Length: 266
Image (cartoon, rainbow, N blue to C red):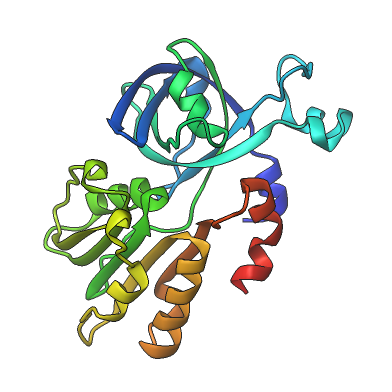
């Protein structure tokens, strides 16, 4: 997808339908409304949207047009953006669900998800995405922390009947477990940050067999970079079957991480 394609995505003006506390640190925000009819699914299980947050005190053109905003306002007044996986999209019900991590008052998206109410406006751009489980591989590897859990959950739901998958998920503690559905044959293990569990060591110890492996490894950037090297250089997996991305980096804001992501992950 070209940069022009990304910029040409229209802003979708949706409304909050309801929210649900899934775990102590995860809130589901369900969006709907007439504006959601403009959303076009792309078939990826890591499909994502950008949620636009208006900067307090800034007057934006109405109807809201992001291209006009870019042209008419200084960059510091552009809406802040956060990226969230589309956990569910129900065309018949006209609903789209986003699962959002909450760490108290920290960050931008979490506090918003905690206070948003039915009827509130939600500005969305997207979708993007690039991954979906393939039916022509021998094994699926899905690895991530809480930030990747929505995409991994959606991917498990899309696995073909009987597909073999190994899943490792790092969350804070047992309270953050979710019920995950799949038609595949899955080896799932939850790791707990409070116990000092480590995804890199866990993956290094796995037996993935001798066949083809499609891997989805997303989450904290340091972990992701280590595992990319392991999967490519030590296990010699096919690069074309790998979806690997640092969703966030410890000690960095979302804005700072976007600026340095390309160089860090190179």
